[in-house]
Length: 513
Ligand SMILES: [Zn+2]
Image 1: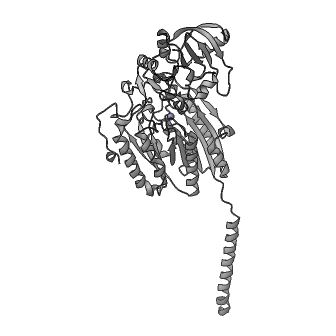
Image 2 (image 1 turned 90 degrees about the vertical axis):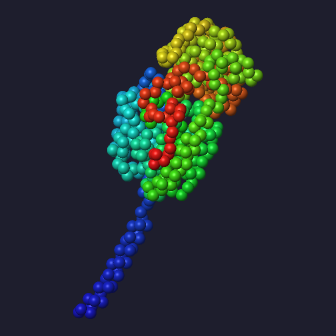
Image 3 (image 1 turned 60 degrees about the vertical axis):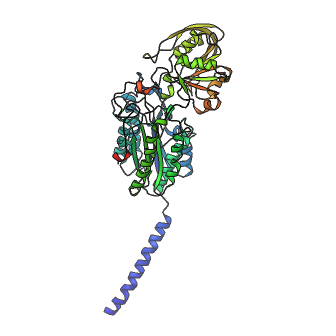
């Protein structure tokens, strides 16, 4: 009997083992890889604290649901990868004053509620600018990420894309798992950067990495006009970023030039290197040290790459120039840096000095456009324009001219420009706060900038489309919310010392790490 048991037991055990293996085999064979679920949200704004007007909900373009994914390379990529996307609110507005508290809280509450209702998610992609500042919040971006983390938990990987003019705080950066920023200024890689942020997230999820971001703030505060990535010294430094991302254990590297018109402690340059996991943090920090040292050593070479002058000097140089067209940028009133776009100082100078063959594109004044529309094309108008948004540096100007064109309202772009011909000067009036960035903007109002001797635009540096066609550019150092002479600004909150406000300061990476 004992013999029978002792001989049967191994057989039974063997059969059981085989059965277990078979069950495991079939259950494994049947199991499909789980579909990854990625939620996406975003608040994009570059907030200029020197601007006295708040940015409110009406200034934002808000996308929800499938509209978020339309014509986006990153969304197409996720679709092709078979990833389930949960699109929530994406809000973006042009650079302007600090964001109103209730506007931000409205956005946050909707995003958080969507995260709560999303069920199990593996990752989150945030589409940000990086220079968001909200009234009443010391660091709204940190608040947003902490609020999201409260709902999603720490296990969810969060990746974010940024404009390189963002001001990054270390607490905010450490709350993210992955981040990447534009590598060009003027920007031509927006779409590429968003795609990179999303593909980094997907790779990390598929490889089950736990990426961490190494970050260093560099005490350098410069306007973007001194931080052009195609010009030295930044050219050689930015060119290193893709190679750093190729190193074993490293995933990405970013350099933020920063936004100097946001007077907050975190304002200034910063560098981030993303490591695959904590074990590669030292490698990431080595790269931080290398890049930070280069930037610090080259700080005095971070200069404007065009002629600069006051209004009179800029106009006189342009008139004397042999170039057929000279672009003058009204840099203090640069709407792409959060200024108003309705300062009339340069126009006033041109009129009072009888300058001929000039184009001013443009001045923001919806009331004036409405009035031109009422008066009608071909008729004379006598109106007071500008100085209504920027009431600190700007003042209104009375003009008289002939209405040359009034376009019909475009609900998609919210645009309805008008052109008035003054004595020798064509003036574009705008309903929406913006700058002329490309030849296409001039085409929309039926004008060729190259037909004029002087073209005035509300920019600091010319954006790429205009850089490509401009025979000569002079930056007029004008007053306004985006004053380029940042040394003259009444900073109260920026961390000090910071170069060049504290020109002789010393700084060493070794004291940080
Ligand atoms: Zn930017």
